[in-house]
Amino acid sequence: MVEDLKIGSRYDGFLFLAESARNPPVLRSHRHVELEFNMVAEGSITYVVGGRRFTFRKRSLLWLFPSRDHQLVDRSADAKYYVAVFKPGLIRSACREPRYTALKKRSFAGDDVPHSVLEPAAFELVKRTMDLLLTDGLDPDLLNREGGFGAVSDFSFEHGDPDALNAGLRHLLLTCWRYQETGGVSGAAVPLHPAVIRALDLLGHGSWGGSLASLARHCGVSEAHLSRVFARQMGVSLSRYRNSVRLGRFLELCRGPSKGTMLENAYAAGFGSYAQFYKVFVQAYGAPPGTTMRHKG
Image (cartoon, rainbow, N blue to C red; front, side, top):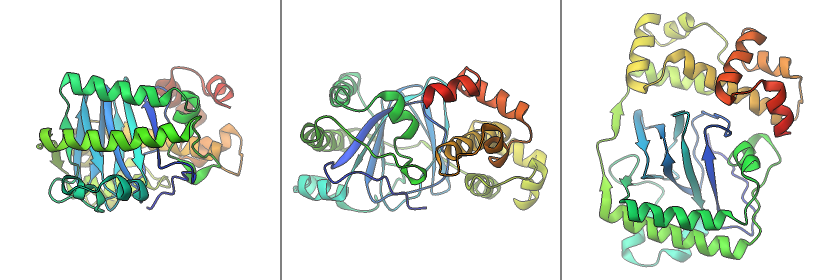
């Protein structure tokens, strides 16, 4: 799925700090024309790219190129990670020397997710640079609620100083790629079982309403086998992942044009009962949905 990030013409990209505690778990597989990198500030995040699982921890810098679908499938409860995206025009104007040629391509030769683990000094430098750029940005709660998910809302990224942001994004792009060149690592990939890939695909569309047993049948294996291999390879239980997908779908419906009630949206997202939805929501956000949704509105 090609995602339109709806970045205004004044901006060459965007930047925000995503946090598990307030960033909705939108887990569908997608790609976009912009180059993206993430830098993990706390905890860990897990992506699936090209049928393989990648888990990244603190100080990891990872690159997601435009041609590859990527799917965020799990985050630790304390995860905080910077998300920066760069429009093709910025890349063309900034990357003139041969050492930056790879950034102008739609895909990266070799590892599906090129990444590096920054040395502490480099990590702190990049972190301070990004924090400085965020000072004139939108409210962090708003960015976490809406940033990157413009396909289902009228949200568009804004910043108090577009010129400074654009200059900062250019500097970040070149600086971080130099760190990638000198400190790139490999070995984070875990090849996934075909049944796990199929389950991710079926659940990732947000429309799966059947039981785990019926999901397993569609994947060609038993429920016990699918649950076991999914948990082993993904590091998260199948039921927890399904509930995260449902919660993400619920939040999308709440932001969408239909404006259904909370109960209607919970059922439409695939929850079997309001009690189940309530339990999952409180586990994710630490507060009842009524209180949290009023605060977010």
